[in-house]
Image (cartoon, rainbow over all chains, first blue to last red; front, top):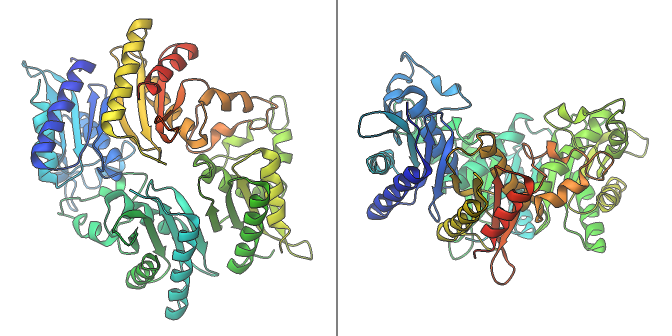
Length: 133
Length: 133
Length: 133
Length: 133
């Protein structure tokens, strides 16, 4: 297990900001370490206020279960094996936009959560951020 | 971004009360500013106690994502792209009754949330309130 | 036990607003019914954001124990008989500014909580509000 | 009332980081807007995990009452006029380290909260950050 540094987290956020600007979207971007603790956060001007919390919950959710948030959401539907898992951990967000951050060896360093647009955009921006390392 | 004044918020609430009386319904009516902070609230006599909180959550939810609450509810259904988003922000309410408040130039000043009857009535009363400015 | 009506609560708030203007202070004013449920709330322009919650907690605290909030604060000091009672009920506020609202016969109808200035001003405004009935 | 931009918030955080390095301390640094919503956050490597939350609560507390957090702490001591005010607003932090951020005209834009060392260091770093604009 590694742990993301502030320098790395800022690099992740800057890559996510750059991608957001390319897409013309206003995002909230959160980076947590491998202990799910917040390391860095940026809210773009006029980004949704409700996405401040969602971006952090997405980052934590990805690291809680070591998978992209959207994968968990497939299992948490009515009738699914993890139905309503969102009630745990003071609230999970299980739709796309939370992505693990790994180093070049595949070691998990933390996770990024992005919220502010469609889930497709959120996921694309999060992936751009995670790939910056 | 502007911010609703108390004078404006009271005008919004009075218009919502008038509409509620026309419809013969008992409502809880909340107005938040553009930072989602409560500015004014009125509970009509015999309105549901459980709607005190719901009206405030509706107002906040509308401002959190800059859209009517019912729009979010369409996306948060099982299988939808925002399934279970209600777990964020200490609880969202995503059925109709939360409406943005804008000035004549379209600048967001805050939001109104109404709860106490059918969602159709709640939305109609909220809209009457929002249109009072 | 009685219960304050919206018409009465609005009269209480208007009296409190008038007193606030006389004192030149910016207040948050909350009125709860005899069940501690919020009936009416007004935040004056530029009043402290942190006092939105405090005014409501003061109103509830007064009604929880049927006494002015400042009386409880005398007993909740270190070594006092109610030390740290503030941890109950999702947070009490036990300094002045919460006052019971009674009708002409002394029947409790609810309570008013005021926050935004010194505790002396808060208590004076709350008393003006409570005396409006 | 204004609202801090992300560009301004990043400038505030960078100035606070620079001061932290000069002092040889590991800080958590949070910036909120005038509505108390989180705009930017940085956790220095090896900074206390418990200070992630404290830094955010300090920033919010400063803006809630438009004063440095240490000022409130003077009044919230046993026997003080605001004893146990910390129970409001989901938890306040009332020792030094939270400072308002204003523009050149004195307009409030938001607040910075710093936690990770002595309260003297926390306050010094917060002040350096706030003065960057």
